[in-house]
Amino acid sequence: MERSPNSTKEELMLKDSFSFGDLCSIIEILRGKDGCPWDREQDHLSIRGNLIEETYEAVEAIDKADSDLLKEELGDVLMQIVFHAQMEKETGSFDIGDVINGTCRKLIDRHPHVFSSEGKVDSEEALKNWEKAKNIEKQRKTLSSSLESIPPSLPALMRASKMYRKLISSSDARMTDTGDILPDAFEKINALSKISADSSAREREELIGNLLFDITRLSCILGTDSEKALNDVLEDKIRTVRKSEGLG
Image (cartoon, rainbow, N blue to C red):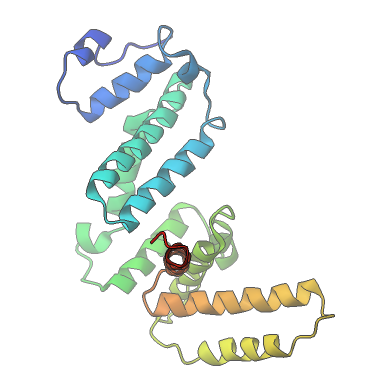
């Protein structure tokens, strides 16, 4: 049975400012029997790409340090979240309140150094505690199951960074020393310089892939986001080309 939204269309049309509850009401109205035909037709899969696109647009606003644009793009991301939650509410599975409740519970449980009597920790120890708590919650008893939980759909450099951080958090190691990585990276660069034209594609891919992972490991240790670093270089290349064309 379809439930009525908290605010009616008439009430919403008279408002000058809105609350989170109003957003939920608007999405529910749009999905209702007298709502928008397009919104009513959507399901999780049909708007899956929208969530990804809006998230990347929010990231772009962050990279541009554009607060006004970020405000707008965060709103678009939030709308997508409420939209997906509304679709689940219609099936009786969960609603946005359950989403918020689960997130709040998770934040409290995974920060015992803040919400309990556990002693103070530094940022790296806090990250390790988060990973340990997450693995317990998800019943991930092996390192491989933890690594497999990283979505393969992530950009490769981002996935590599998350994987390396999980590998570090599973041990007593700390991301402070580049000494063991640099020789590995130089060895692969040397191997690439000697690779022959008739070598297999698999051999070339393996060398390049391992070198990229070494670079990502270095980025993590140096506190650099490898995904962002590469994107920044690409933007610089575009600006250089524009200048060469007299457009910059």
